[in-house]
Image (cartoon, rainbow, N blue to C red; front, side, top):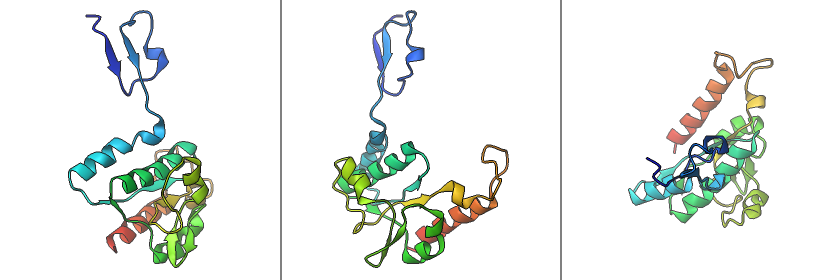
Length: 164
C-alpha cells in the first residue's frame, strides 16, 4: 500500500531497498534498549530489579551498566550480589569484588564513560559472569549441551537473589 511508516526496531539496512522506499528503520542506541521496559515496570509499581551481565562482549557489558542507571532513574531497588555470593563466585567474573563490605560488580569508569550517576562502589550492582571462566575446559558453548558448571553458576545467582 506504500504507506509511509517507521520501524523502531528494524534498523537492518538490508531490509530497506528500492522496493520499499516508503519505509525505513530506526534504532535507538543499544544502551537505551532496557530504559523503556524498566520505566514501564516502575509505572506498573514493580519495585525490584535483578540484572545479570556477561562480561566478555561489549553489548551485554554496556547494557547492564545502562540498566543500572535506568533503575536509579526509575527508583527501582536493585537486588545485587551478596558478600556470600562474592566469596563463592567472584573468581568466575572479571569485576566482582568485595568493596566497602559489600559485593559489587562493574567499575566506576564504566559508568563515568557513559555520563551516568550510578556509583559502582556504593550502590548495589548487577551480577556478572565471565563464561569462559565458568564452563568446563574444552566445552563448546554452541553445541546442543548445557554446561553443568554454568547451570551451577546460574543456580548460585538464583539462590542468592532468593536469600534477599
